[in-house]
Image (cartoon, rainbow, N blue to C red; front, side, top):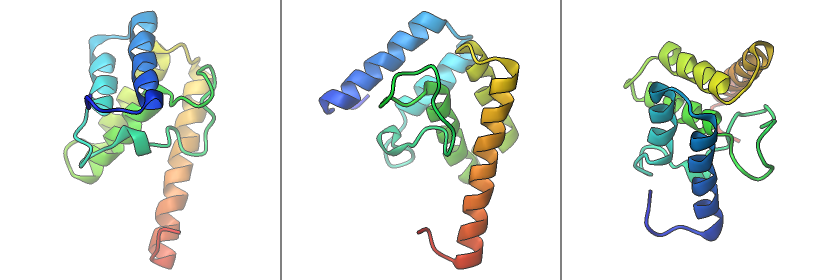
Length: 132
């Protein structure tokens, strides 16, 4: 983690570490989340991450990003660079949500909501050639 951080981002990073301690996810999921939060900001800046696009961050305090969603956004950034496949990132996302106590239906609804959001965004960019 960057040594210089705002109080909010330090608090959020500490909350993410506390969540790893509380939920004790498998090593693969732990690495998935830590890699996202400790990524080079040029490649992926978790401070600018919006978590699970268009999907609520249920069961996590308001104002904080849900760590599995930050991990998934990081995986999507890596997928766009050709480092990992989307399928692998999605698999880790589902495993992370399971480790964080999301039930089967909740995991699949969140994954579907995120996927639809990204597909709609990609369609918008392709059709209109702009980001806003």
